[in-house]
Image (cartoon, rainbow, N blue to C red; front, side):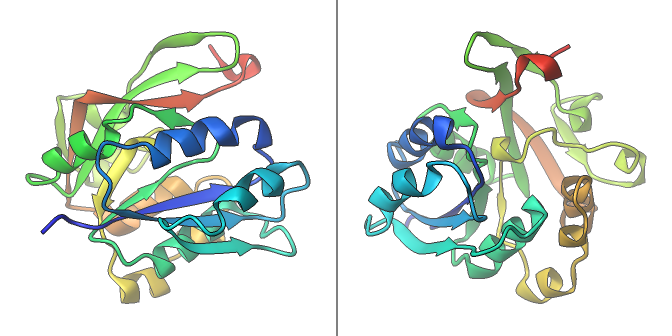
Length: 214
């Protein structure tokens, strides 16, 4: 029996990029997944785009906040609380990926707790070079420990597929209390001592505007 993947889409004011992101989710070669759409009170045209997916058979939850939560990590936590899958994918709403992303990531997860895809930086004007994840400075496998605490081990959550999160541990977690470094706290709260593997058999595209590109 195929494993269920929970795809969490936290959306906020990315109407320009949503169609591209949604296309990369709903056209995956691996099709046993649920999609949890969480809009954080967008003020652009995001809702008009998302609304066409409200009754899609793959969409298990469609939740629109009446007020902005103030932190993307609160949306991460909400999605993880709702998720029923064996594996989790937090798909940021301005990124995209190859259509074999889930298929190739699931193959890797037979031997690790988190599979992290190769990242290519892109924006509306260019597709740039690979962005290396700090966790893999010493090779294609890493056990997350204290030596990784000074940096964020995975640079973009969209590139990661990981095993389901324990609900009690999620309830007690602190990562959603942060506005900026919540992703770093998240990885260390849930994957300390766990095995991360780099996967170059598929690609995740990480949107960075020109002003942020080095």
